[in-house]
Every structure is written in C-alpha cells, then in structure tokens.
Image 1 (tube, rainbow, N blue to C red):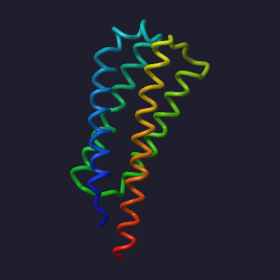
Image 2: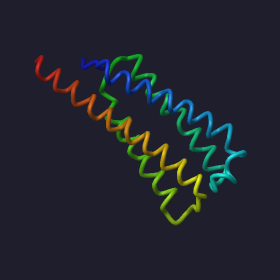
Image 3: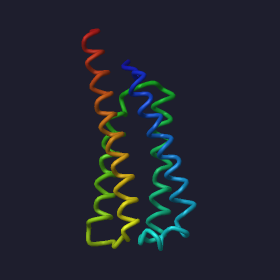
Length: 132
C-alpha cells in the first residue's frame, strides 16, 4: 500500500487546519461579515459547513496513512477554487471589494495547497515506482 510522504502529510495537515479555521470563521461569522463582504449569510454559513466532511476526509487520510483518496482531495480543492472564482466574477453575487479580496485570497491559498498536493502525490508515485 502506498503511504504518505512527510511532505504530503504536512500539506494535508495544513489543508485540514486551514479548512477547520476557515470553516469555523465562516459559520460563526456569517451573520456578522455578510455586509462587509457583500455576500449572503447563507452562502457563508453553508460554505463553512461544507468544509466539515472535507476536513473529516483529510483526517481519515492522515489516520490511515494512505494516498488513495488524495486525488479526490486535489479535485475538491480545485472545485472550491472554481466555485470561489464564480462567486467573485460570476453573475450571481456582487461582493464588495473586501469580499472580492477575501474570496480571492482564500481561493489562492486553496489553489496553492492543491498544487502542493499534486507535487507531493507525484513524488510518492515516483518513489513507489522506483521501489517496485
């Protein structure tokens, strides 16, 4: 069975921690920040709530030390980035400038994490391919 490298494990830990903090902030701050961000409270709240199963998936991957579901995590991270960009640039919402900065900044962090996960997964696959 393919196991996580220390690099990939660390990136997944950072993803889990930042996702947890972001989820709590979105859930707890939905009613307080919606005017500042120009986004509906429900969007902020449900976005935060949607992170809970994602964080559980990350925790399971870390606990099982397996890479089999890392491509799913990478895909979900890229979907989050695409959805975030839709919120900023799509026709459905009209975020304020602070809202645009906030959404783009968190999308950039998620994109970087996804790219680091791609790099880490490729390293693991090369390592395991060389060992076989």
